[in-house]
Length: 130
Figure (tube, one colour):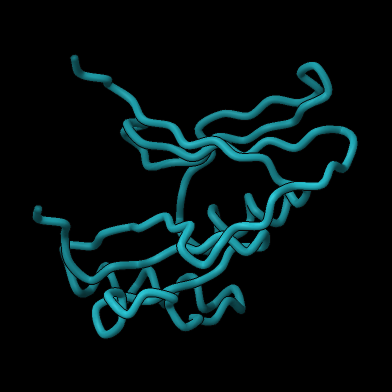
């Protein structure tokens, strides 16, 4: 069995700020969005091939949401050092600064950031090879 697309969806109470972080800070494109769908607004962001993307939804009523741990991670892998550097520069231009990773595995080969909701994003200098 082979799925042809992969989406991770999560709620937020800061939709505009989260979209700005992922769009302006990480260069993801808005692939789609919706407003007032049964009380929800949402935005899908990803890379142009649409194979992998993130969805953020916000209910019309602000609701308490669970806080992420420091090990809730989204990892973006860069196989080119120049692209890795550009990605870090783009994110830091928006005023976001790296944070200390919880797990020492990520030190010295990546940078860790937090989005407006406190979810962690890792920009990794290299590719995953199991």
